[in-house]
Structures are given as structure tokens and as C-alpha cells.
Length: 148
Length: 316
Image (cartoon, each protein chain N blue to C red):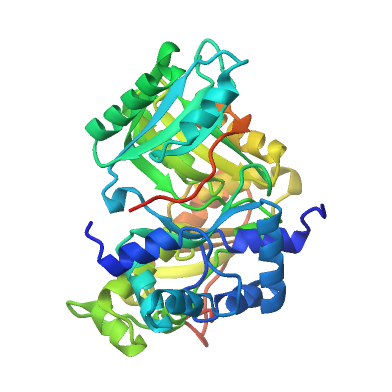
């Protein structure tokens, strides 16, 4: 999807460092030589076009609550149904079909490790399938956002 | 370092769907969880300093930006060298995440994970080939798992307390739409445009807000509530006195009737209350008789004698 030059500037500059001050969008506008209203409208428009998911924090894994990556081998005919069951859980925030014997991959987050394992247990029972659970052991990447 | 308190957790939970796009977003966020703007800002600074917040900014949807292909590239790297290789791979710009995770033999032999995004599969394949050629990665067993279908992508909701985790944040336009459209919805060929005019919102904006609220479960459905009586049918409230040890079994029997719309346990000798709705008024009796026969218990139908109020609306 095409981005205007201004949209590109806003996205590339503010995937981190939205100011913690009472009028953050005014601060952004001032830094880019735009008006606060223009920045707000641009962000709302990007959201309507589903380019912007949200403006907010990306939380480091396992600092607030616990999260994990999990995968299942789902028979092809049941994939949509099982995926829908998995997606319906509020704890699941990513859920993708991938090309592998383990063909459904999802990320889930909850208040603590026990809560994460309880959700996995529920998913296994509901689907009648085993879940391979792959918790984070070490993170190497510093998330700086995504250049567009 | 001071651990997170309940308010920090509520703050993180309420920010899962992002800042409201308003001039004073932190004040609005504070009002949703009962703290001041200054407190919101102070807490966010602290969470950022602690490294709990990895970044605070625009989160994009890769696919909508044309990064249509994404692959999870994985390697089985000996434990004594995996950290070093992980840091090398993480430095590549197109590697958006890089983690070590446990192997799960025999199903899963790999321990190093990278997410790689690109415009198309060929670009992603070329980028991963580059990682394998330019680093030691290529000397270890590996696999590339392209994603095919995205079923869900949203911000993580770390349950703070049950209560705050269940609250889905609404922005002011969501609220205005809910408050305005519960009573009536225009019947015309562009209803969203027409309803939007009154609220000063574009048709696309209305649809996007309503779709968002349907997706998040704020709206259980969007559509008409029928008046069964005027359609020749009937709706009645009914109650039963169910022995406590049979409650679940009886509830299941009652709920199995497609005519039963709501069924609640209430604190009274008559402890099960449900609504029966039928397309033809005369069918009520038959449903009541069936339930009585199946359960061996008396059903007390409580038909409406006069209607004083209809049109349940909630102001949010």
C-alpha cells in the first residue's frame, strides 16, 4: 500500500520514542514541522487503512506477566476450525499457519507462567491435539521498529 | 528495582490496544484506570527505564505495508555457540526478532529463531540465504517456515487482574457510536454514511470503528432486535424450582431447546429463570410441556401482562 512521504517520515521516526508528555502528538508535530491536528488525522487515517496497528508500548517478553510461542500439528481439514478456537482466546495475540509439519503457530501472553500453561492445557483439550511449547530462553534482538 | 504494582499492570493492560488518538492521550488513559495524567506519565517513564517497555511508538501491520512474506528461520545450533550467533543474526536489519528457545525432540530440533520480513518470498529466501552464507549459520541444520495464513495479530494482553484484563478500552468515538446507535440505525442504502453524518464521522471511519468493536468483542452483534409478539410469536419468562444437585443436568436439558434464549441461576426457591421465544404464540405451551416431561419438574410461565419499558441501552 502506498505511503505518502509525510506518512513515511512519521512512521520511520516514531516507531519508538513517542514522548511521555501531556501532548505527545503536538511534540511530534513540532519536531516534523506539522500541526498536531495533522499528525492525529494522519495516524487515524493509517489506522483506518489498517497500516497502523496501534501507537503504544511494545512490552519486553516476560517482564509483565509471561508469554510463549507454541505450535501444533493440525490435520489440514481441521486447520480453520482449530485456528478459530485458538484465536478466540484473548490470551493469544498472534496466530499463523506455517509451512511445516507443525503448521499452526501462535503466541500467547497471560498474567504468569502458570496461567500460560493453563491456557495451553485448555487448547490441547479443546482441540484434542498436543501443543509443542517453546518459551523464550534468550533474546538477541533489540527491537527498533521497522523501516518503511 | 521496585517491582510492578497492580496499577502498573492495569496501565499495561489498558495500553494493549494503544493510545487513543487524541491531543491528550495520557489524560484519557489515566481516566480509564482512575489515575492522573501525571501519574500515567511517571509510570510509563519508569517502565521504560526498567526495560519493561521495549519501545513506545507506532506499531505497523507488516502485511498492509507490502511486506507480504514473512518467514520464521530456525537453526539447530550447539548450545555453546548459539548466543554468539544469535547476536550476529540479530544485527541484520531485516531480522525483526531473534530468540533462543528450547528444542522439543522429536517434534522440534531447532533452538535459534529469527523472524524475517520481506516484500515477497524470493526476497525473504534471498535474505535468509545471505544469513547462511555470510555467517556460520549455514553450517547448522536449519529450516524456513513461511507463513501462509494470518489468523490473528494484535497487541499482547497480559492479564493484570481478571477485571482489568476483561475491559476492552474504547476511544471516545467508539463511545459516541455505541451511545448513538443503540436506539436506531438508519435504514437506507448507505446507513453507515448516514449515521456518521450525525456524529461527524466519515462512512469509512464508522465502519472501521464498528468492525474494530466487533473484532474485540465489545459488540456481541450488530443488527436488529426483533419484537417477537408483533411477528406473531411470543416471548415469555419462565421459572423452575430445581433441586440443587440436579441443577446442571436440568440446565442442560432446558438449554437444549432452541426456543430457550437466556437461562440464569437466581437466588430464590425458584432458582432457574429462562426466556422462551417462539414464532407462533401457541407453541409456548408445547415447549413448557416438553420441559416438564423431560425434567419431571413444574415450569412456571410468567407471561408479560403489560409492557412498561423496552429498549435496553447502556451509556458508556
